[in-house]
Length: 505
Image (cartoon, rainbow, N blue to C red; front, side):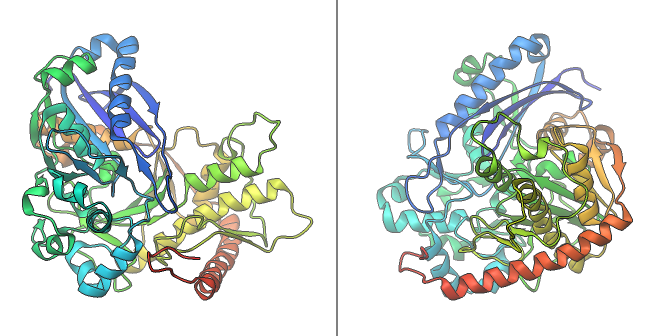
């Protein structure tokens, strides 16, 4: 095995992580730099791409303090990042304004118009996902209508990780995972859809070249190298959207799933052939390994719902850590139910105007009861995704937990009991960065392919088995949750009046 280290840069929705790995997958050091999100209008969610770059620069320089020797022996760089973001690359290489990120809903009217014009089922068959305001296609259509000068002058429309890699190398490309996240990519033809490009009013040259995620996109240029404190010429691979965490979780075949519980939440599984959901709830896109496919469903509020509840329910005089840092109670809070659709919901209901609710609230309930109901509601929302996946591809034998660091035992056990599946705790606390790292090791020839890299690098530290009695109790409460979620959605649809711009009142 070649000696050296891999630098992985992970552009998240709240912070940039920079992680150094050995070629064998051991984490040497890491840093995290937060950046702000702005909401300048109703349904608008933006970030400044320069903050991503600043986060990467500051993060890499922080690594020098803790791992100088390892940083001096970096043999490749790989970038990953949150999906469904839109950065308009200007002619001179800078971003044209702020990036529109995942939660941005300004394109609701455009998404509806596109769905009506093309047909939701056709869009789903072409792209593997429903048309939704979060998709860059809807955001590009919004720009065309509202900010035509940016739409016309954009050299390229990029994801966050592709923009950061452009800063590293000057390269303008993407990978199939991020391409699928645009609603502009034909997953069967493995190319941009001419039909959808016409809908967006963009030219083929405004979309990045789609390359294998392990391919060398270019070398670290001198300007970027100076900013990062690295040597110029280091190979930089194409990388992949943050669903490369399937690699970090060891997902290389059917029968197991991955839970992602970040700002948003998702359950992902694997298939050896394309599987379309008749309800169009589950998204389909290529696995980083070319012979496999990933199926996944996402919920809009996971960690964000926990953070909201912690801020709302925490007495202002306390300095207590967040609600998941406490020991989560093991027993369900019947009959109190929390529906966490604070900013709409994606799977399985696809309710862009959805809202959250507590059902069963009584004068006897305490703030601790409310907190536990929030914990349970987030996991119940993910359980609905799991149910839908299992209806399509069969039972999942195990669920590995992505991003488990800091999870207390009660919180982990609660999830195992709700899912009623063994929960695998990963050996690596950074599976997304680890997945990006593996792309680089294959790209520079450390491993012969992703299957070899996954076999050598990933592992499960231990299994958390569900408690059968508690699983039965949670099954009863889960049934109430499903009823509450559906009833809340129906009530809100009756109440909601959609305005001409797609907003709701």
